[in-house]
Length: 191
Image (cartoon, rainbow, N blue to C red):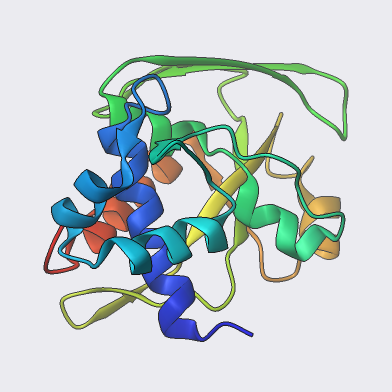
C-alpha cells in the first residue's frame, strides 16, 4: 500500500521526468533524474515504478507499459495533452470525437494560449487524481488529468453524472488550470 505522500511525490517526479525527457523523446538516466529532484536514486526508481514508468538499462523511458484494468487506477496513466504542451513548449493539435454527440472536436494550443477551438463551445472533461496533494502557497490545487473532449458543456453532462468528482472546463480555462497545477508541481522545493 502506498501513502498519500508517496503518491504526491510520485506525481511530482513523473512531472520532472516528463519535462526532462521532453515527453519521452530523450530518455534520462535515473541517477540524473534523482539528482535533479534531490532524491536518492533508489527512491526515485521506486516512485517511477509506482507511476508505471519503465526503467531500462538505468534509463527512464516514457513507454508506460501495461495499464491497470480498473478505471480508477487507469486515470493515473492517461497522458494529458495540456501537460505535454507545458512540458515541451511545443504546440499541440488534438482531434477528437465527442462521445455524446459524435461531433468532431479540434483544439490547437501552446503552453501560453489556446489558438483555436472547434466547435467554440467545446469543453475538457477532467478526472480528479485522488490521493494526490498539491499546494501552491496556502492554496490546495486539485490534481486533474484531461480524459476527453466534448462538443459542449451540455454534451458532457452525462459524463459528469458518471464521474461525480470530475470537472468540465472550457479549453482556455483548462489550459489556465494546467499552468496553475504545474506551478504547484514545481513548487516542490527541489524541482
